[in-house]
Length: 156
Ligand code: FES
Image (cartoon, rainbow, N blue to C red; front, top):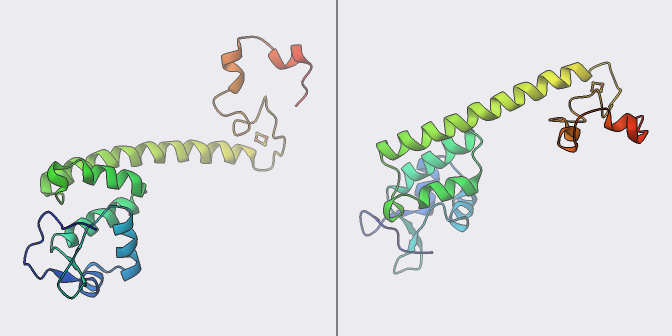
C-alpha cells in the first residue's frame, strides 16, 4: 500500500464510501489493490483512505473488464501513464481505442470459431484432415506440402 499520487483532500474516502460510490464490493477494492490497480494510504486511525480520483480509476477498470481486457493488461496500461496518474479524458480515449481494436479482433476470432463449430454440428468426424477445429490453421502446413498423413499411414 502506498500513498496515492493525488489523494485530494487529506482525509480521502473510506473503503465503504468508495465501494458505495463505485458500485463495487469492498472485497473487489481489496482485490484491485492487491493487483496494483488502485492504491490507498492509512490515516492516523490506521484506516484505509483513497483519493477521490480512485472513482474514475475504478470506472476505467470496470469498463475495461466488461470489454474482456485482462486485469494484468489493465494494470500495465494504468502504470504506463505518467506518475501512474488516473486516466484523464485523453488517456481514456487512447486506451479505449486500443481495447476496442482488441475487442474487434476477439470478435472476429470468435465469429470464425462459431462458423467452424457450426460445420461440426451433426458431423462428429473430428478428423485431423477435415475438421477445422481439430486442425486449426492447418498444423501440418509447416511440415511441407503433399499428402503427409497418407504417406505416414495415418487414417485419423
Ligand atoms: S467434427 Fe467433422 S468437421 Fe468438425
